[in-house]
Image (cartoon, rainbow, N blue to C red; front, side):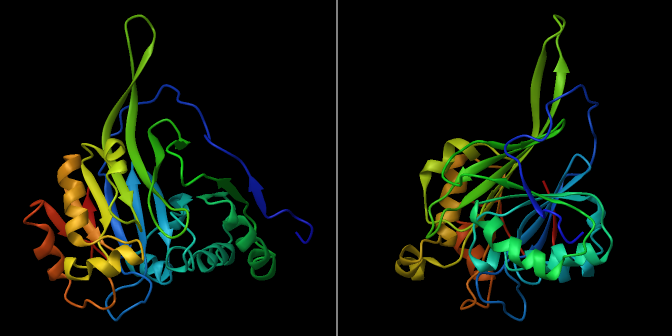
Length: 292
């Protein structure tokens, strides 16, 4: 395998819609990490496992995500797609550990990674050095975080980017559970069932509202409290009140807060700030499984 090419580049959609049955499954998100840049005794950096239509999607992969996955017994054999919101370390430093571990487990199925194009430059030398004998391919899908577009689409799930405002190019991801319904004239309508919006590091921005409007579940970062609003704007993050205001204006079903600053040990303070603005708010805590 010494001369093998490790990262293949493909763009956009993996496979077109075809006839499919209506899946009746439990849609959920598992919190693998809910802290910000600095790990604490109770939080690891960002990571979530989104499960829709019998498929698993990893969203961000900070340090400690692999450990949490192993602790929870997550079956990585069902994981084929990873989405990285941006290239700050607390959202991608766990990726090389995950990929090399999959190699040690003799994985043979390909892994698809959707991220800013620079991730390929960062991963290639590490994979060539640490995973030279792995048996599976990594297929890299470069995305434009500043553009709202469909980046993944198969028979039952589609994923769209949500452009966000942060210090580096950053996007969230909108997961849609869909199926096709055949009309009497032989044409097909795409029917959306459940939607989950993941909005990682971002300052307050109402530009995302048209994209996430009415989603059943919204995850929106809440790094700081309103008492730290000046600091929040300086580093282009959101407060719990910011997240709740977006949820209220977008008329979402429920809001999940996360990406807590290590300076704030009592996470109930985030909830206390958000609920008066948007009552159906919950805290992301590691190991939690949240129905979508």
